[in-house]
Length: 171
Image 1 (cartoon, rainbow, N blue to C red):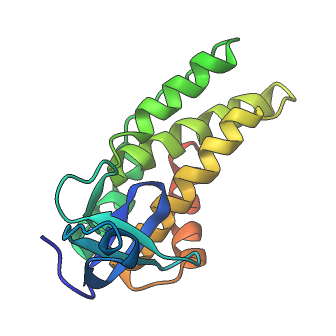
Image 2 (image 1 turned 135 degrees about the horizontal axis):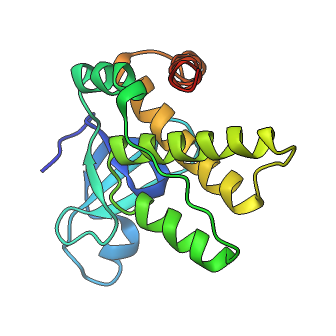
């Protein structure tokens, strides 16, 4: 169970701060006594409500500073795969399956895979497709937000760190 002020990763919402634990008005109106985490996204606006028990969306603690540093330093050796297909649906399903683990290392591997795909495309005077771009954007937002929170840095600094490591790994 999380407590107030904990930082958590909440599905595709990314890093959120637990600012309250209790029963929201919408649940209390139905007579429910079910407890929820009141979540405030760090890099977006709004509020999310996640059930304390039985949440359908993944909620987990933000990784530690040590783990974040280890992931960044390990980018060069990180496994990746360049997935190509002519089917937009297959490509979407492949990327979605990678994102469903909600693990920072899996998302970072996905970023590296699409980064490698972009390098190959540029060699052939081509560009990334829209599906690649969409999943890359989502993965980057999640990873950079989590790494920034874990390291106490801003997202732009983390983006530069990760991008530099990615570029170095393909030299």
